[in-house]
Amino acid sequence: MQPQELTLLIRKYLAGKATPEEHKLLEDWYQTHVAEEVEWDGEDEELLRLNLLRKIQAETHPHAASFNPTRIRRYRLAAAASFFVVFSFALYFFIKDARDAEGNIKKTVNVKTRNDISPGGNKAVLTLSDGSRIILEESEAGVLANQGNAVIMKKKDGQLIYDHHNQASGAGQMNEISTPRGGQYQVILSDGTKVWLNASSSLKFPATFTGSKRSIELTGEAYFEVQKDKKMPFYLKAGDMEVEVLGTHFNIMAYKDEDQSNTTLVEGLVMVKKGNGSRLMKPGEQAVVVKNTDRINLYKANIKKEMAWQRGYYIFERDDVESIMRKISRWYDVEIVYAPGFENTTFTGTVSRFKNLSDVLRVLESTEEVHFKLEGRRVTVMP
Image 1: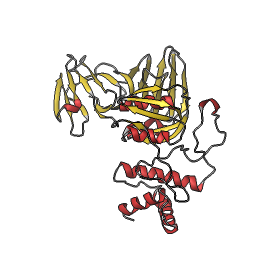
Image 2: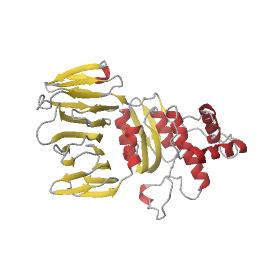
Image 3: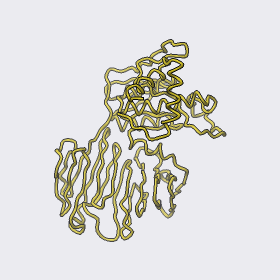
Image 4: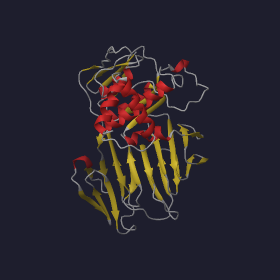
């Protein structure tokens, strides 16, 4: 089946317009190909794939999941396990009208808005050791600066690279890369470590690493792929928490406006330290440190959820509205206010980070548990 034919067929299926023959054709294709790595041409096609998977799972396993959001005060953890992810709202960004089983057009959800806001993008400021600042999104590709023998270059895709000829040169020259609200950026440090910074985050690091260890400092959220070097272990400080690694892939979330810091280990080994306590992590685990405490709790991590932002999505699993709105506030650079009478509600689902804000709010509003008003850069959350 050609990609164009497949896309059209999926759209008809999701809109309830597919014939029985097309229905059978698509399900046969799904059973044959979805489990494999299928390339899609763009973001909408990826959303189509995700939506198709969830709809077929819902139809073939109708009792495996509930699609209704629940209020926090009466939420209880279900005892039964399910093989499928629960989704409480649909991702029909690309469908002009949704239809019910009888083919009637459902009511349209309308976010009260006087404008719309685009998603964030690659934006950051690099501060050199002498205090000079480089606005990266305004800089041309090529060499941006020199710090000792470290050459700072920007690639055509926006990636920032620290290239060096001599690790000793440039020692003590601390640099800082900061993303604003609505920004993200990728940087490769002088040792080859790759870092993806989320919105409203900053990373302090030396232009080149020297001595017996590599030390950096993070505020906000970032994903790391640390270059292995047993002779020079890697230390990351986030607030009053420290993470020690030899070479690993992990995500750390340590925003000041969150009441806890999370370290999620994808591969390798990590030691998380807080006060006098420490915990050794294994792949697939998440270390949670509640602010103003020294206790480190280990849990089984949902890697897909924690890594979703780096891949262009948000995945929510029983996340409350206030925590979701904090993410939205950072990525879309908006102020969030809550109207009188608002009661927190939990949601489960997946949302693209690269849709306009009104599209994201419409998805949340489609549950009819919460409503929004968008004025300028202010979002009012209403019951």
